[in-house]
Structure formats: structure tokens, C-alpha cells
Amino acid sequence: MKTGMTFFGATVILLFLILLGGCGPGKYVPKANEEINGTWTNEKIFPQKVVNTADGWKQYNYMSDPTPLYEGTGGIASKWRDSEGNIWYKIFSTVTSTAYKGTKSQELDKLSKSGTVWESVSTMVREFNSDSYPTKIDPNDSSYRIYYRSEK
Image (cartoon, rainbow, N blue to C red):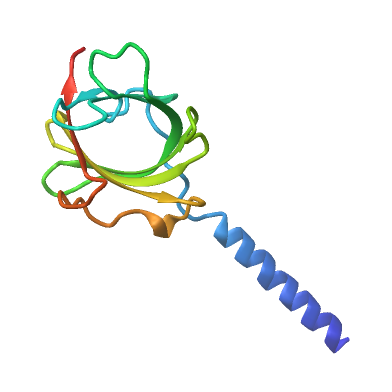
């Protein structure tokens, strides 16, 4: 009987832990008009143009290019505003075209309070992991990019 009670107690505790784990914070569900969506450009870097949509992203080497250099899909792991009103994102992404198809990355993004400047730092990963996101936007990082919202 003692073994049966121990098994029952362990089962109840395990069930409680499973249910408690299911009550944690959920994934961020992006809005259709997410602030990071739109066309972003910078003539001083490559790629010069990025178009973000709810369905994914496209990067163009030159702003005038009719065909994207890379395409991909991804999602938003989290989003928040800092005390200055800037919007921050943790984004995961997978390239879906070219020889780099399947390449995964995770990035930390910052949109200015006005929504007109986008800064990003990224890291390539084998598998998505919440511990693999960059922890700060560093303009000296080799992956650092800055874009400006375009009406084009």
C-alpha cells in the first residue's frame, strides 16, 4: 500500500507540474500591422532594402533591384517598449531561398519611438533557443544593421 501511495503522490505532483508549465507566458502573437512591417532602406549598407510582412521578409541588394537577394520566414518571440518609448523585438528567422536556404538566425531589433529607425543585431544558430538572442544593440557588432522607414 505504501508503494501505491508513493506512486499516486508522484503522479499528482507530476500532473501539477505539467499543468503549471502550461500556464506560463505564451508566444507573442503578431498583429497584422506590426510596427516592424514595411519597407526599410539604407543606401550605405548591403542589403540596401528589406521588406517585412506578416508572411516573411525579402532583402534586396540594391534598392532598385526587382528581385530579392534573399527571402525568409520567421516570427516574433517577444516584443516590449522601453522607458523611452522605443519598441524592441526578439525575432527568429529562416532563409527560404538561395544556397542559404534553411539558415536560421535570431535577432534583437529596436525601432525608434517614432517608428522611423530600425536597428538590428543578429546571430546565426543551429536551432532556435531562447538563450541565443543577442543581448544588446552594438553598432560595432559585425551583424549590426540600421535602416530607415521608406514610403516606397
